Length: 374
Image 1 (spheres, rainbow, N blue to C red):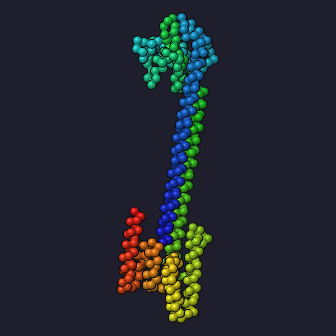
Image 2 (image 1 turned 90 degrees about the horizontal axis):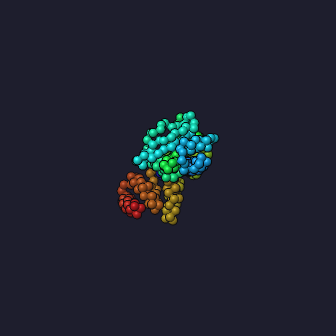
Image 3 (image 1 turned 45 degrees about the vertical axis):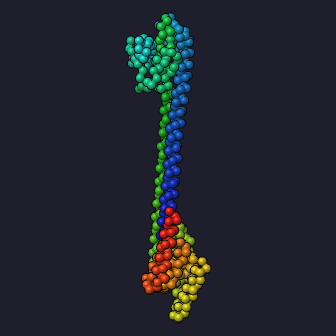
């Protein structure tokens, strides 16, 4: 019975450790998912807002330069360059649509910064390979590409505006520098990464703590059970000069107290054995046996088991004690121990036919109990 309870305790601790581990991992996964989604939302909102702001600024610059309808492209671009002074404009590109609506030819290109990321020359024909053809879209209405592009020394966003010059339609592409926004997004991304590593470290420490605590508890409990088993073996062999340390074995303190009380009673009985004659010893065990039978009849099976067990410790060949313990265990529906007690009783008195009858009856009860559970 003690080994069975220890096993149940170990399973409970393992299940508890697994549950805590699952909860911690679930919270960590939820945190990482929410962080990723929040980061994506913040980035998208910032880029879209910045694209909208740059579109408005491009329209304002074009408006200061004379509007979207012009007669002279050179004069217009010079005015636009003058208006862009002090603004974060890297370059101005003027495109004309070809016979194929998806291709555009570069007509004019002005770099306002020496390191402007423009690798095109006049007359080059280009086609955007993005999901959205912003050149084509900008041919109809003002629009901005929300993606931030970067090179070794620049980060920028493209804004496209439709223009009409000398009754010909063009697309003006303005490259706005976004270095500050890129730096802010990079710092935000680094902060998120540091937070993720911190949460990952805390999660790992929490999991390691759970596993170490569970391992130490299981090992300690195993040592306690082994020590108790060894102690019971010594008592069974007649060594009654032993006690369990209730202060050290806190997990089994109640059991240790009960065990020490039983040992104390057994010591008293042993001392009395030294002062009484053999007939008195038989009477003492006989009275104890009768009391155990009375408890069994009254339905007090637990105390009856304790009494019969004490008698067996004093007299291991007590057939009646084993037999009555088999009945008590059967009443408590502990059919395995009941069959074990009847088997020991049969070993002591093989000719007692009633033992076989009880064994058969308990086996049937055990089968019926198993069927009712399933």
